[in-house]
Length: 355
Image (cartoon, rainbow, N blue to C red):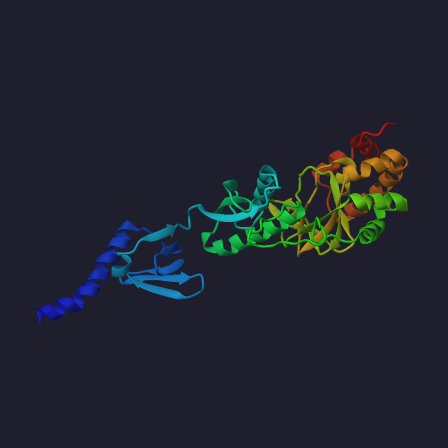
């Protein structure tokens, strides 16, 4: 009888003592992400003297007895710790590694749930047979959301590479045939860009020939949902015309983002950056996938040099637009400083035009 009772209590006592050991050592807490070999990973929901309940990322519940758990190797990502993740991608050898690292690091920094306490690391992992292999190391505010964050980072990498003409490497066993060269899969025909720019009020003083030159020199950029196109305080040297999509114009107010207005297809922003180099007075975020035309100051400079009288026309339009915008939003500190100098003088100085 004693043997039977002893055998019956063996598992119970094993769970009890293992549970006491877990409570004493506290290798993990409720809310931590744990990975147990051959059993999967998930978030710890409950710890008792009998066992542990873990909610998997497929929303299943795993219940493991303490006696079994005590024999397993457990990987723990504490919820109050900055836990890191690795994401990989590769590019062709034609692309500059330094430029790629700079672009991708900036993109990763802006992804939600990526911690701002530690700067993401982007580095060359290997020089492979097909291209340059890169490794991204970043830290999460909430490690339980690592799957979503990994996916969002991969999405942002794709968009950034499209904008910067960074090409992904193809396996050598794949035959990749291009019948038409395209710098950007979203590139629109020249006449569509011309028509879009012709509808922008500040370019009204330009002749058709001048607008065509601007259209040929402009760049097509595509941004992912919730990705920033420009950031408040950032140095400006270009403006943007929305060709497709929607954006929100936001400013920081008491540490929180405040949306001033929403812009849609045909609207434009950043004209002061293009014409005067003024820092961005607001952050512009893509609401959905958004395609914009970017006009850089280098595109406009030859036109102004050939036709200096345009400066006067452009400055008057900008002044009128400022009056309208000031009714929609409060003056920012940057704008008040810029107002001390006339738009006309600022344009001439920025483009180095002589009197």
